[in-house]
Image 1 (tube, helix red, strand yellow):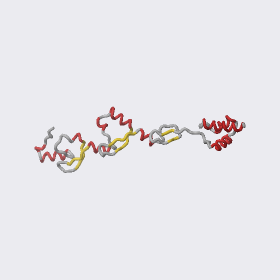
Image 2 (cartoon, helix red, strand yellow):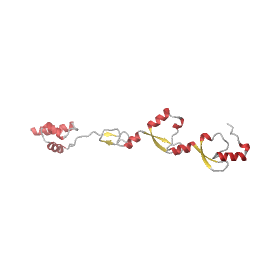
Image 3 (cartoon, one colour):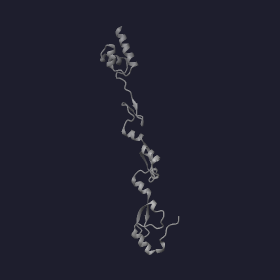
Image 4 (cartoon, one colour):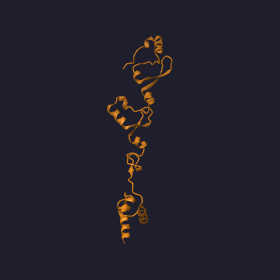
Length: 173
């Protein structure tokens, strides 16, 4: 009769406290860990202690260790924002903290998002054809707006204006 009470108490203890180990239950009721395991197996209860599970903040995957993210990749995705390149229209990720800083304190050109320095250079430069030698070249957009003619070098410009002296004038604004 005492054995039945002990068995019922062990079963009740496991149902009430899933975090307790078999060793803890055995010490409390004066039986071995193996005996506790046998009783729990017969009752169809879990023999292993319950482990609290945590969820990743990004993907929702369950993980045993307490933390915010399950991997570095999830952490990177969580702290990134998706932007569109102004030049090639490709989507790319950038750290949200840098984006917020650029919007608050950055220069005007910091608000134009580019996926690479190559795209930034292509966006801010225009490909032109030299009016004298017909060679293609690139110039920053800020240097192009005021002139009618475009030259790849100072030599081409002087040679062109020697041949066409009346063409030396600026575009009207």
